[in-house]
Image (tube, rainbow, N blue to C red):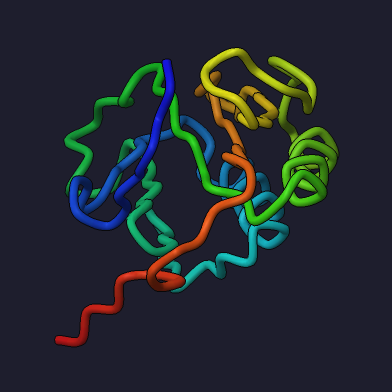
Length: 142
């Protein structure tokens, strides 16, 4: 499949993962998001969030006591080195390898790594190859 243009910031408002061990997930996501240059924005006793991602415990009011189950999330990486750093950080902070950094057949230049987070979610970092962005991100002030 050849992709000529990608749009980001117009489809997903937010994603919530409900996890079995909030501290293990916070350690994992803090480490992998740091290498992707995405800070954890806020924390509380039963959740934390970074941009569009909210991770909460089953005991949080929004979770209603139910884990989300297995999900696949793919984070954007700036380059191949960032994909590789993501993979190393994930493995060092409770993640399990689910596909080492390398080229994938999805389209030319697709370079990714896959790990399983502490709850078994398939987490990916992907670099789509050389491209020009119209803006680094969508900024919403409210």
